[in-house]
Image (cartoon, rainbow, N blue to C red; front, side, top):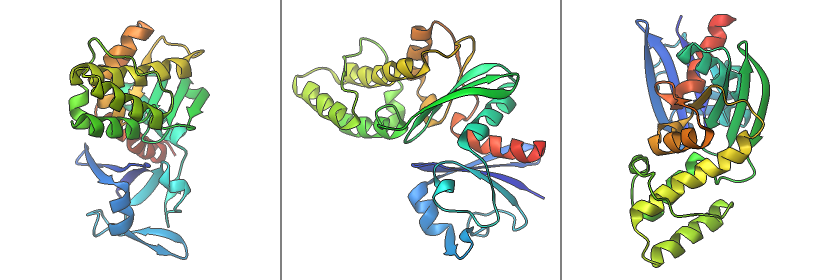
Length: 252
């Protein structure tokens, strides 16, 4: 029997499973995932295993933004907090750490001690510290999100705490002729500044970053400098939640 971890995010849907003891990862745009890889039934959203190229007898453990809004027929559902915690423990073999989950629409700080969640905080009132924000700012700068991660030096100050106002501020600074490299550094630093206020009060002995934004090396380096500690990033951090879903089943 195959166990499939499914993390339905606001922006991307992540699928993970093991094949011959090696992890397999698949990434889909969430809108496309809903349109093409399932159908609505009386029991909820029914996955099309054939289109997803998954074994029909697979057991599905799901988490993420989407699993709360589209009940998955036949799936076991767990919280994002639980999924990302279990994924980080499995991937990094840690028992005590503070986890930053950079989501597409919200951000979470989770404190784990002796492999148990003892505290967490979620910020979902504004997208200004999320993956969606980075995508929008990269579009304004005329670069891919991956390119943003190359810039951390001499950041221009982006002070707006609202994602919409921050985009306007970025446009204004572009009109002033500020170099694009400084603007990109400023975008990355603005994410870090927002996380600093969110993480206040949590231990920073060991910091772990998960989610797609954790692939941005500039943000990880800047955050480590500000917190004066190394930020540990698991391999394929965007799939931490999906891996955690598999771990939940295995531990059950």
